[in-house]
Amino acid sequence: MTGSSYVGRFAPSPSGPLHLGSLLAAVASFLDARAHDGVWLVRMEDIDPPREQAGAADEILRQLQQFGLAWDNDVLFQSQRLDAYAAALMQLANEGLCFRCECTRSALRENGNVYSGQCRHYGVSARDLQYVDKDSSSDAAVRVRVPRETYSLLDRVQGSYSQNLASEVGDFVVRRKDRLFAYQLAVVVDDAYQGITDIVRGIDLLESTPRQLYLQECLGYRTPRYAHLPIIVDAAGDKLSKQSFAPPLKSERPQEQLHQCLDLLGLSPPRTLIDSSVDTILAWGIEHWDIQAVPKLATLKVPQSS
Ligand code: GLU
Image (cartoon, rainbow, N blue to C red):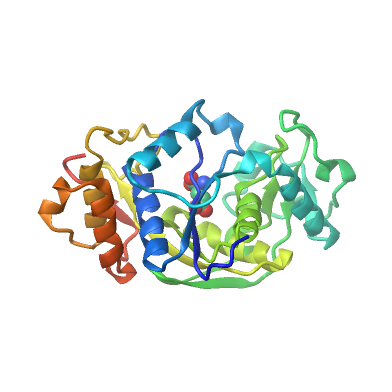
C-alpha cells in the first residue's frame, strides 16, 4: 500500500477507551515509526462485536488526537475487511491446512492449553468457509493444522523467542464457532495488506507471534520485525486492561501521561518537559528514541501518580 521502508501501526480493539497500558504501546510504536521517518497507521480491530463497547472506537481515535499521536492515511476498520479474511481462510483450506472442530468448550478445557488434535481427521465443508452473516452461529470452529516445528524470532526488545507450535499450542482456531474470524488470522492478513514492516506492541502478544509467523508462511506473506514491550500491571500484579477497569486516561493533563510513557520506556525525560505541549514532548521523544533503552522486562508497575 505504501512505498516507505518503515511502516508501523497501532491496532487497538475497541473494547473500551485507552488506558495507560494501551497508551504506552501507541506511544512506543509512534516514536519508533517517526524516529525511522516511517509511516504510522492506525487499524481498528473491530471484529469481535461481543467484546466491543459502543462508542469506544471513536473515543480511542479522539484520545490519540488529544495525545498528539497523529496517524497517516485513513484508519483501517477490520469490520470492513471480512471478504479478505474469508479469502485467506479459503487459501489455507485449499492448501489442505484446515479442519472443522466440533469440540465443546468443556472438552477443550479438560484437555488443557494445547489442542489435543481430536478433530484433525475432519475436513472442512464449503459452508464452514463461506461468508455467512457474522451474527449466525455454526456448530463448528475452523482450525489450522500446525507442523511439529519450532518458530523463532529475534525480538528487538526481548531478544530471541521460540515456540514449538505442535507441543506448545496445537492446531489453532482461525474462524470461531460464532463464525467470527479469529484475531490470529485477521492480524496477519491486515499486516500484510497494509505493508507493515515493524510491529511494536505489548509482550502479552509475544506468545501469539509464532502462530502469526506460521500463518504468514502459509499465506506467502513477508514477516515484519517485532518489538514486544513490557506491559503495565497494577499493585496486585494484574495487567492494566479495559476488562479489569483500568483507570481511563486523564484528559485534562495529557502531558503528564505522555511524560510517564517516555519515562516507562526508559528515555529519562527531563522533569521540566512535563510543562511543554504534547507536540513538544513527542518531538523530544522522537529525538531521544532508543529501543535499546526499553526495559527488557515482562511487566512494569503502574506509576504511583496514576
Ligand atoms: N488488537 C490487539 C489488542 O488490542 C492488538 C493487536 C496487535 O497489536 O497485534 O490487544
